Length: 271
Image (cartoon, rainbow, N blue to C red; front, side):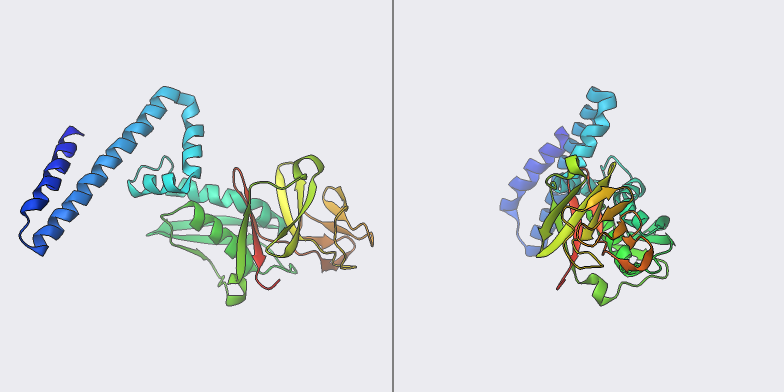
């Protein structure tokens, strides 16, 4: 550490005697490398101190640090992220599993190489109003946001067309009344959204009955069904919003990513 600091001072002082643009560039590049090494060594020392001091509690601190995108970016830049790329991809997938489960599907990591994740979607979304491409989009968004080293997500046999990509992801720190009542509404990007919670799993749907087209505010909730207060139709929230006794009707599920302290919902543009 002391040697790097001394070299940094020498490089800064050496700029006064530079005679050519090429020499200036070479010295500037070495300065940046030395500075990066100094900061990297300092960050590594901080992580080691946290680990040694807090022992069993250090994982919670690392999790909190990695929730901050600026800090996480620095850790990735210096190769110091406390969790491997594979672990972080798995965590990203875990954040969207409730949405995949609502489509009676699952997901498997086929491989990770050169910043590309290859996935295999499992199960079936047959008859679901959200396309497989939209499911892939939800997964892709979660991985790209949570794992900076990944620049592409591929799913076997799935190509996200232009219609699937026209969506806006909106973040919420909390949803009013959801924790105590299990159901709450919000307007996101001009679209009415209904949130339903069963245990620790949260689902998001467009707030519109597929039968009478009225809002579902005040709907009765009894796992796994949500019952429209106007027409009395019941919809299976856990299984993509299928209507009970009439599988031709669905309330529209919206891709949702649940992070440790907020939700992200995908709202189709023009919806």
